[in-house]
Length: 439
Image 1 (tube, rainbow, N blue to C red):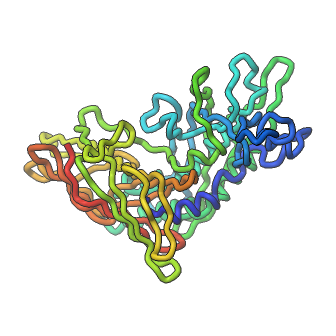
Image 2 (cartoon, rainbow, N blue to C red):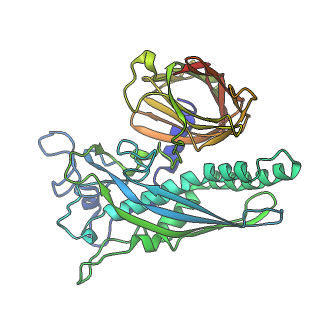
Image 3 (cartoon, rainbow, N blue to C red):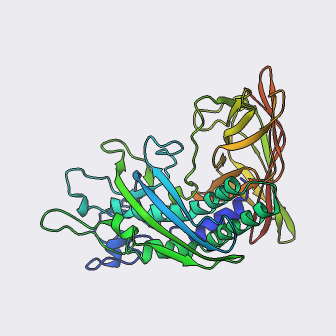
């Protein structure tokens, strides 16, 4: 729900630009590429409704659908910073894994996906488009996920209270700002310029095909952000594709490569000693900037025990407390909508079909002497906020603008009011989560 109008507009602007075969491959007509002139896809002549596409879909094709495939593999991204301040992250590696079995990655919300016809294991991989579409989506998802990873690094490496730490955080956050504001450049460098997006599949005499992982590894993006950092270079050190899932099982329908645009690479991996709790009941309220002279507002009920939530739709909390060492952390926080919500102004409203808030990574908390209260200061936690409306997904990054206080009780934990904020071209957005009981 939060920032829904902005993030949905943003997803339409960014989408999966630069993806595979935006123009028809050599020897294929535009109608063949869209799957509408050979009867293999598109609405049939009898008007019987949408039919399966005979090609992978990057953009939506009216009358066509394909099948969602969860991609598996990994990527290592190197971020090299040439800065004039002491302690600059001269080189930092961002390692991301994706696929079944990876925490936070699922078939329903895959980190990387391909919207393609069913994969045929009996055919050579080089004759099928799945690997190419996986690697193109990997590049896009990696671009979207860099910003919060950089901010997470800034907080971890330079989280101290000194003015020097504050300056270093600001420098890294300037890099994150540039990445956020230049997503088209990022996708262009890693999808179009590498050839991942436009190099058509082919097989040699031995049944070997294009190495899309090797193509992606040629990607380099250099820029000079605002602030004291003089140059940044982002490159792919290694990329691996190991397949698509599931095979030989019923597959969900999809309509384009944008179907997972509401998903980011999240490092959700709670410590096994943490306490996992479920929300008893709770609500969230949206406050947005004025649009057309009227403020954007919204209200949503969170999935909880009170709403009879089902697995995957329940709001959960994971807390780790080591009273002996005197340390604690928020290991996970997931907030899910219990159902559709209305967001808008007094003149215009938008129905948000689903929204979710997810903690980016394990976040240290301040533990009181009695080990009964955990406090995360403002700006201490990063979240991915996603929403979907009428089939259009989107996602943004946001941080806590108020302290989050968790208090232990005989029946679990109580969370204080939590305000999550985000700034974009339209203005300032906040999502306020009301105080809640967790058991």
